[in-house]
Image 1 (cartoon, rainbow, N blue to C red):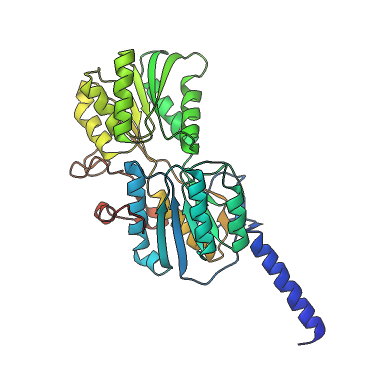
Image 2: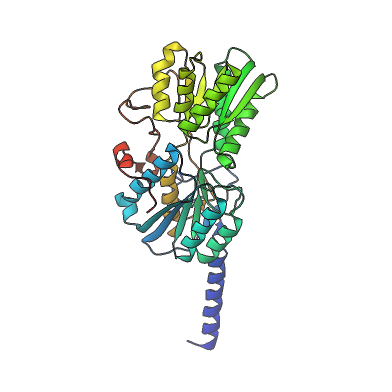
Length: 373
């Protein structure tokens, strides 16, 4: 090798290392498999990471695990990691749940980075506190994929449904099923401090507080959990006596049980896609319980894992991947299709994404556990 050749090779290596340390390059689309990895909108930019040889070490850095959605999400991650497609790509899959402490979640992610993991899937406890850890991941060549509770950032690839739209769709459906533009609405919010709770709340309020509407809105915190939501709704009914409609971000089964236990007249309820909620909607429709069930699928974790592998392979990926919002409303609930009489109330009903090749059976998901491992 001549002196000039060595200089050119060294320069190329430095440039390559610098690009790697800076994280993904911003490139032109279209991206990989747009049927699955659909860009959020026309302005979405595209990323490309330097290709790595697999199989890969992938981690799930979860935060809060105190509700059935998170439990099923972890079970689905384990089930998806065990499928033939993912098993051939993943040599190690590690899960850690750290609770609601931002510092603990960041520390877990730093530990994965320092331990040489290739990608970290995460549900961020806070939408704005993860900038420094993203920089550290980029410097180490680690792909981070937030999903569900995403970040207020365009510097990292993320997977989500449009949370603001979930809130506004819920509000719009309630407006169509109310007799007027006045009355008292109960809003059962999620886990405080999360982007999902914030965005669904803003979408809901934009809908029901539109010009001409004069609703009184009572807010309670349900933490996306059946038990917490049931108590919060029971307390709200005890104080306010009567509501004209209810919006529940999640914990919908518990929220409706509170109405039934209090002998509250049945009202329009827009909730999540819990199997128990849908069963209650069917059983009580004749008494006036009209429901919209709008899903935020735990299956987002599988699409995030698939996206991480594609990114590690050097594929061009949208910075923000949009997942369709599944919705079923009265009178379209069908046993064996949109709800499952023989499955647990705690089962979330939307877990199949044919365009992504993600088609896990309920038995495969529920056979797993939610433990760190």
